[in-house]
Amino acid sequence: MEEKVLERWRDQDVFAESIRRRAGRPRWGFFEGPPTANGSPGSHHVLSRSFKDIFTRYRTMSGYYVERKGGWDCHGLPVELAVERELGFKNKHEIETYGIEKFNARCRESVFSHVDEWKRLTERVGVWIDMDNAYRTLDTSYIESVWWALKTIYEKDLLFEKLKVVPYCQP
Image (cartoon, rainbow, N blue to C red; front, side, top):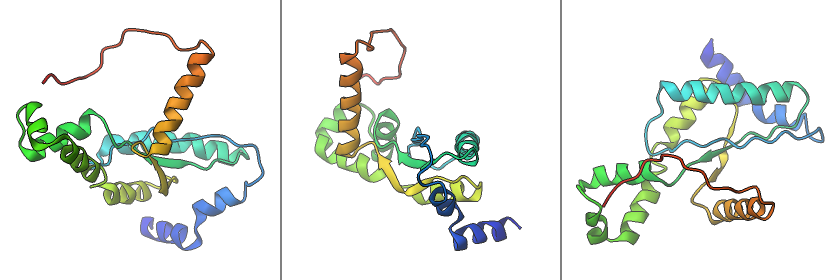
């Protein structure tokens, strides 16, 4: 039965139709806090994706226009650590020896290595989100939008310093 439902949704493009039918209605914004697709999705991802889907479906059923744009987190410590493991590095100095540009290129390649698995899982659990036109945190347009947002928040005196513990790696 599951496969029949998914096939019907695909054949009739039900997700796109649900958005099209609400064109011109009040907008409700949704940008996914994106996963890093350099690893396989797990059961905990099903839960988080389902929660996000609940809110967007509710707003859609309430008459809002909700685009539901997906995204991919393409940088950060998880990506770097995975590539370091793959290359067999034991310390940060080996990145410099390998070449920073070469290492960064390898990180960019690896970050999309499991996208197809993520797409299959997302469809399989019935989550409706546009992953074909996803934003990517390594794209210049995304990075510039973050800097624009920070500048705007700063200019409105809404940015402040606070202490927070975050993961990091020592050289």
